Every structure is written in C-alpha cells, then in structure tokens.
Image (cartoon, rainbow, N blue to C red; front, side, top):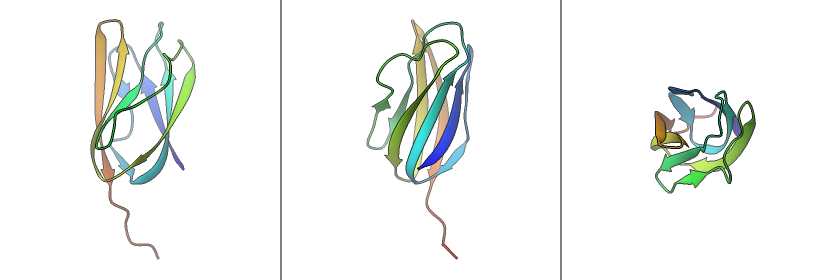
Length: 94
C-alpha cells in the first residue's frame, strides 16, 4: 500500500492533488487544537477513520480506490473542511 500524507489544519486540508489507483494508506495528522474527524468521499465510499483524531496525533485509513474524483472531508463541531483530489489510472509498467 502506498502512503498518502494528509494534514488537517484549522482552515484547510493539505494533501496531494493526484494519487495512484489501488491500495492506499491515508495518514491523517491533526495539526489543530481540537479533535477532528476524517473521511474520504467518492466512488464506492465514504470511508471514515473510526473515531475522531486527537489534537497533534495521527491516524490511518486503508482504502482501495479506483480512478476518479474524490474528496477528503474533516469536521470539528460545525466546521467542515474539504480538499479534492484525483485518483489516476495506473500507467504502463516497464
């Protein structure tokens, strides 16, 4: 599984704009002062981290994603942040 880093900030989510299709491990780091949820929405989802991520902690989520458009979503109270990303088709192998 390939690891994809995601940083949850007070006002935004930082992650890659494009990732490869297949098995992925999303590593969510909560860089805020309060607990935050984390999930991925898109084709076949949503997939959620099983509990809120404590402040200054990380949690992972393993998923199999097909090519397409997806969104990382994080919530804390009424605040909802999103970040779009694209899953690319695998390229030819040498």
